[in-house]
Length: 317
Image (cartoon, rainbow, N blue to C red):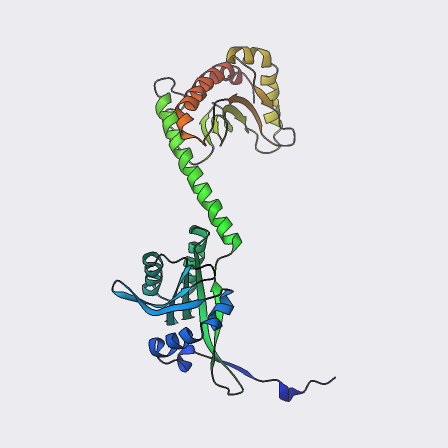
């Protein structure tokens, strides 16, 4: 069946300023009376509470109530986004104790979109930011109608990503603090890690006298340990297995000198090998246990190094 072309209109998009020359007198008042046009695009139910609510020396364009009674603030800017309006958006959100902030603009800049994305990741799950582009559309010369496009907004994925980033940041901070304490406590007991600085990694390493081989402290959330990590041969890994086998042949004597069993990990499917001594009593999770865990780790490293280093020095590579 042939489509009747007379039934198809022509859509024209024009700057929102052409339809609403004055932002405060025209656009904000129109939006107050037709809030559902924006609410539908946001996927929210909104009811306007007041226009131009005073916040100190400033006035928020629209204050609304959200679907669960949350306070929602809307800041209109019928021009390219700028730092001034971004600052106002945050000022209104904080001072009015709002849960949702909506920034309506005729031209969202990419750098400000990144800020909104970051805010949605960094803030709690019950806080949300939206960046909305406003345009005017006509069909075959009809009166102009605003068209709202959500450029940036919250999502379950962004909140989860933000939670994971916070978790990583907290974990990195804890590791640095843990290593600071361990290095401080080890000063009077051994020179093995003298000159080392704390890092964010879950391990702290010092050389074993052969390239690619190191004595490492290991700290995880719930446990700790010391190890010899063998990655001297970074091509085929064949020499790594040879070094490991030479030490494993002395397993009984090494464990006797260490004072307990060790976990011998040849890691046949991988290039490197390791010998691990587990340290009980806790990990990174509970800072109140750190001093005891650190002392056990230092004691284990001293015995571990004494048992392995002289034998490692005699292994030909």
